[in-house]
Length: 213
Image 1 (tube, rainbow, N blue to C red):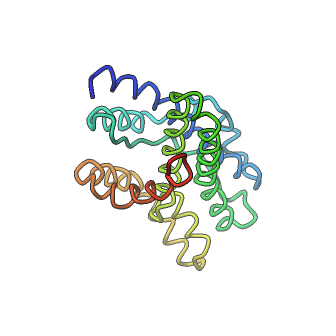
Image 2: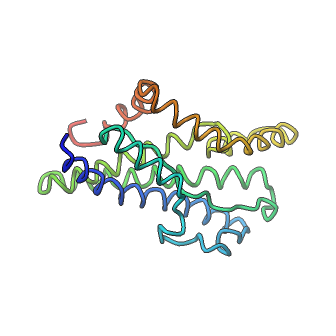
């Protein structure tokens, strides 16, 4: 891949990824607001403005991994939406629903993108490829965030099924969240085969929804 091809791929990928991350975080905030927590709204996070959701280090990680891998791999994140579970009638169940909302939004976007691929692939190859990329991005985001490791969204979903005492110990692991992100980043860079054998396998299955899958 030439430098020009890499730049073009990045310029196509970046806005699609930003939209996916923004919708993901917005879904968290919207669900929390519906359940009675105004924290995200107070902080101006119930918005589609990407500048409100960008995380500096998450964006740097995205650029470094994308360029470093020649466009074949990327890893980044947005700024988590602030949530105060004390506003929920049932904090444990509330956090489960808020956590599930983000990946659910990504899977919904993936299904929409897949449907649009079927509508466009016969008349615009570029549009179909861009939509297919949006599909892949949202499948990956949804699956990664469902990994049941604090503070990923999957840990919130698992937490909804734990006993009260075990749940309190479970959420206490959130303080190690930055180490989790860095650990995942190191694994993805040092052993890309781990990504291929896990997330990559899910992607292989998901391609059945696209033309030619």
